[in-house]
View 1 (cartoon, one colour):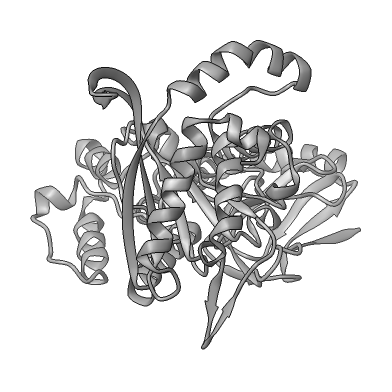
View 2: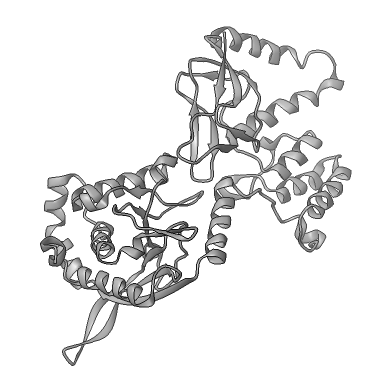
Length: 419
């Protein structure tokens, strides 16, 4: 029996997705709940599992297609794995028999198989298919050994008789893009890859934030000595008691919640001519992934303790690295924290995450000479940056908010005592 594989519910405010890649090809055996296709939304990448065991049938939505919730992606032949595999094998064995003239035809099969294991970019796929090439026979020099357009063209120059089609492909790709046509020798070494849906939305939202908000950034620096000592003294006991590591982000989340309670405009948003003040504290924690930046949300952080916050952040990090963050994980944030310091950033001006009005940027901890009680001492210092929407947050509030974060982090006992 044929079963439809459909687009699942994608989460709050997400209506459509892009088919990123098929993990299975027509005729492949599939186990129940095994991922068969990867979808990309404007927030996350998610895998769609097989609804039952069987073999992959017709693929209806091709890679790159835009699909809505409930749309049919492909068909699954339930329980047909055992019957179809020998038949497919017999078909493959019988194919080469007729005449030597049909010898090039089987090359099409390796193209599909190789592309499912190691996805090809549209430009590379077109060259491979138009010239009836086997990608498995071409050495890839791209990321993770992937084929680039230059690899295919170099392979064709080295011994293929299909060179005449290559020059036609390059100008077509170049003319479609709003950019100056590169020199022929440079074009052969370029690879054109469509922006992912996630990357397109990141670009659109960040530019929209710059165009819409009256964005300004204020800076301060914080002495991390007390927090680092606290972490060093209690790390092992904390991890033994709560089963999660003791990091700095949890303390910054707690400090942010305390400061947001005192300066509610930083936790608010503009809706038309209204200001919406939020009496809850959903703190987004920016996490970098190979696909781009995602911001899962620690919901109701004001009602959580340090251990619960750290556990949640650790879970987000693990799932983000494995592509398991869901759209719901990133919905409803009221304020965001971004830690560029993990990548070595000493100073930056973070961009707002619309419709939020504030974002806190943490940076690299670096030992610097500072003056304390008229003496120059060496302390582990971190620059902090608060980007805010000046339409709703005055400079006094922004500067005071960041100074409060500094005060709480430099004396973490205040967080315990609530003062």
